[in-house]
Image: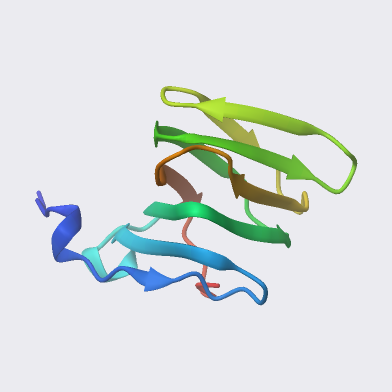
Length: 117
């Protein structure tokens, strides 16, 4: 068993070009002994955004705080609030815009993969 506090994990800028004021903490990953899934905590600051991008793995997202737009390159947009969940299929281009008056905070669960973009 392993216990941590999210504040003890480095809060690093999201490493995508044209990202604005977005940070990620790798809460649980291979370095903790996880073999199948990684848990990440994202913070997108007021008026922050993450541009369209894609990954080979699917995403499961739980909104902890805030209001945002999650959108894809097919024109679909989902407005999310605290308590909402999202599923993003593999290879679907997606982006995020913080629409609220506070930070957007969400948990993202992904399969373990070698490249931590």
